[in-house]
Length: 157
Image (cartoon, rainbow, N blue to C red; front, side):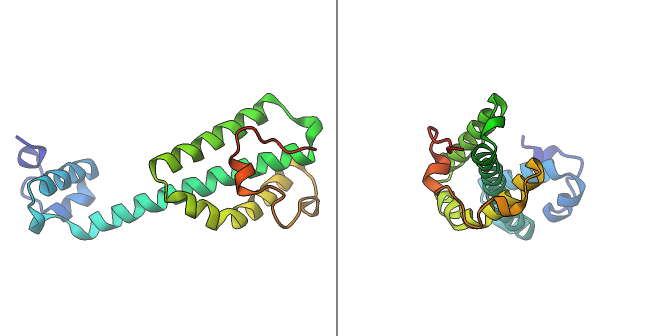
């Protein structure tokens, strides 16, 4: 017996369940899709959830790229302060990006499309974290997208 047939919200429609119990709503959506019971599926919220999933992946790309670029800037403009912690952060965010591209190769296009904007954000973050004037960091990234993702690349100071 499926969760959809044994739950306390059995009389509720699939769409009303979305606000009452999200986990159960998901279970029912899967059950309804598997049984091809398309008439009862809460299409509106299902579409919104799927769109949200794509948006979350893109936000993760931006976040990881901004952190990675910020640390590359710190390495370039404060080489005397390089630490294992900085190297760890660079490796960690490169791995996250590579994993995202492995699971969803089309995200690499998004990475390239957003690279310049993410750099500008990383520039602001690097300035705030290092205390260096923002003018210290060039307006355009001193690193290419390929260098940024290259596990062997560390900028010269």
